[in-house]
Length: 224
Image 1 (tube, rainbow, N blue to C red):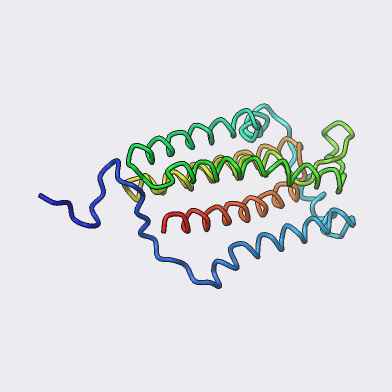
Image 2: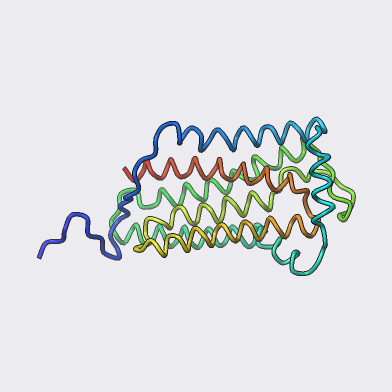
């Protein structure tokens, strides 16, 4: 019996069924976090008034302990990047087995995105030269948070390229929730332990959202 047009099997190529968003939403998706990131960077570079609030918030939240240290480690390159590589390998393998055109492209795009993270973050660290919190050794280069950006892009990219291959809405929600929880855990650990000011982390959220938004738009274009 022939298969119905919209029926999917386990190894069928991705068939996104989410309606295409409007142009204004797509512009907002990339513009808003980018503008916020620029605003935060300007405040750090000019020692703006937002840093006073940032300092008070940090003093209220900092309480170094072993748990926060372990949570912060989830943003290490040695942890987050191998997780992305493993998912990228799985997605490419599924795409090749299903005979999907350009089966390798989503995985390569996600890996390229994670490579871009240090190329963006490291020059900003050197330029802003922001000192760390009082609980870390005297140094500069804490803005933006590299651990947060790495976690956001690695776990977020892994979720984005995996979603089309998940067969149920429950599985898709679980993957998105897992990625969000991991990023939140890293962020909490960094601020709680005093490794970063809260603004360092929030700025990296904005950077991560902008980068993931660009990847999402690219994946939609490829899928069509």
